[in-house]
Every structure is written in structure tokens, then in C-alpha cells.
Image (cartoon, rainbow, N blue to C red):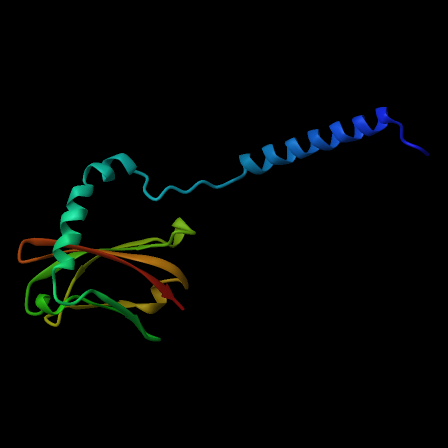
Length: 147
């Protein structure tokens, strides 16, 4: 069977229509995850993040995050030792919002906080730490991979 130009145009148009239906189907079933459900409210308070980051960057050491088989250890800078420290930790997973965790913490006298390793699923995270030491707010965020 030979195809004349009319058949070729019909096949081309049919292929285009099928492709468009496929694209509509894929776009309707795509899961859109926002970084924050309250994006605008968080944006208004972003100056506090900038100020906290500047204060944390002025310290002699940075926040370190390490993991062992049992725990994930967050070590705050040396200047924080011996101070009363409390704050929030957000384990933000950019690829899956169901893995996100928000925790409140109180650091020990060595400015250290340990989190149970089994409570965190393996994956890539951004650890966002917002803490207050003796009334001064600090902020730090860094990428971290849980294995």
C-alpha cells in the first residue's frame, strides 16, 4: 500500500494530537511541591535570616554536621559552648517534601545536639539551623547527605 500526501498529513496530524493528549495527561498528574506552604509570610521575615547568617559567619568556626551509624551530630561553633542554646532545625529534602523534618532542640554544654540516625531517611538534605544563644539569633544552612 502506498501512502499519498493526504494519508501522510492525516498520520502526522493524528500523531500530533496523540502527543498533545499525552502531554496534557502528564502535566495534570505532575506533583508540584513548594519549598514552603507559607511562601509570602516567610519572605517577609527573611531579613531575620540574613541578619542571623551574618552573625553566624562572624564566628570563628562554622556549624558542622556529621553522622555515624547511630546518630547525626550537629556541632555549633566554639563560641557557643557554655551558653544556653535553643532553636529549630529543618531537615529540608529538595526532592521530596514528605522527608522534611522540623525539630526544636536544646544544645548541651558542649554546644552539641544529637539526632537519632534511624529517624531520618537516606537522601540529600539542606540542614537549616536557626538558634538563639543568650538572646542573640543565629542562622546557618548547609547541604548534607544522609547515607
